[in-house]
Image 1 (cartoon, rainbow, N blue to C red):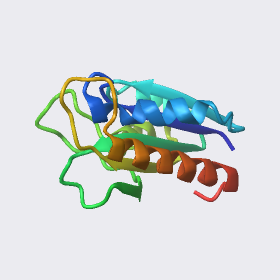
Image 2 (cartoon, one colour; image 1 turned 60 degrees about the vertical axis):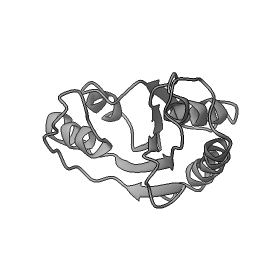
Image 3 (cartoon, rainbow, N blue to C red; image 1 turned 90 degrees about the horizontal axis):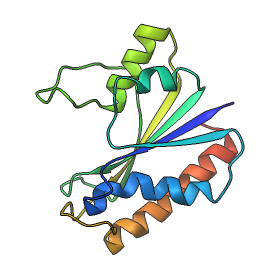
Length: 147
């Protein structure tokens, strides 16, 4: 089984860079069958990338109003038009993958509630703690193979 873990966000906007932080921590674990990729945001090209994998794990920051510090959800294909032209969700990318490449990898999204999205390159302590928990959860998920 091949797994892509995709962390995205803006590293220059404090907690918005949490996806990059999680992937940096995962890189040190050298998980078998796993490839890591970071990006500023999800792009249409990600549909082609994820088509080559059995499973995909997305990692991103959530808004401060998110109900939980960590939310894990299964992603299903569901393309929607957005008011912002350069905005795609994991469900959008999965839908594009299914439509363009006839592939639908199993997909999970880990959303980590952000606190501070001002300019800066460090995570807030609460978000760093949640990110480290997500690293543990992802490592357990990959090792168990139970997506």
